[in-house]
Length: 98
Image (tube, rainbow, N blue to C red):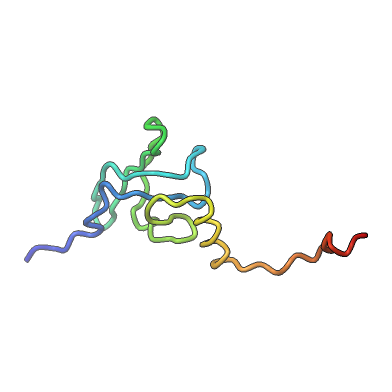
């Protein structure tokens, strides 16, 4: 019986980091490595191929750190506002000043 491969579409997938990693947010998976029960992804920055690192592929499922696809800053902020709703600002509005 053949075991089902974890993360079958990992290589070639594109990801956006919610916080900059070495100055970049957009990454692509260029390689994968299976080590026992763990799967690792080699990430390369879209705009700088010299920025590359290996990470546990399971971390890509953490929406606080990574979003699937290449997201714009507005899209990232929209996701963050859903994850971390904030209270309205307590500063007085400029409209009340004469």
